Amino acid sequence: MFKGEYQHALDEKNRLTVPSKFREGLGDSFVITRGLDNCLFAYAADEWSKLEEKLKALPFTRADARSFSRFFFSGAVDAEVDKQGRVVIPSNLKEHARIDKDVVIIGVATRVEIWAKAEWEAFREKTEASYEQIAEKIVDIGI
Image 1 (tube, rainbow, N blue to C red):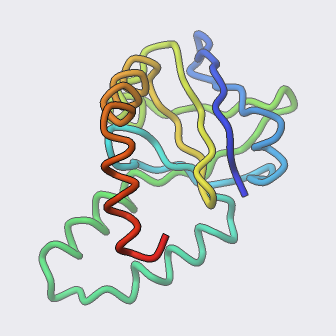
Image 2: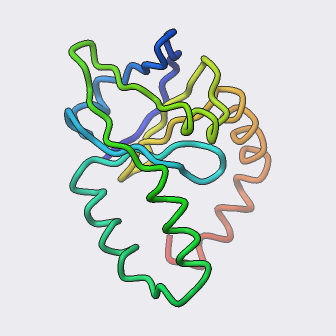
């Protein structure tokens, strides 16, 4: 399970150091793709396989399922961790997440999210303001 928040920066070759606690769970090779809310999602191989099976089961006759799958899978890349614990973030994924240099990497149970620092701070500020109302709403779904 992934948890926590870490701040890092991309180097001049678009390499990002993956926190060692996350490297343990992600392994030497994992998948990075476009996430929601202008961030990137990173999945360990086994978790990616589970998600892939669920998405393949969506009805291809539904336009929203086709659109989501196209966008999600077309952005997916296999990330290889180098000896210094870094992965390269491709330019199309950097653009999607609005990443320039400063990055926040967070653990979200089954995945890791990679955020541009400014995007994460804006999201966090907005969410903190309504955290209690969100908590009240998710009680209805069994949390």
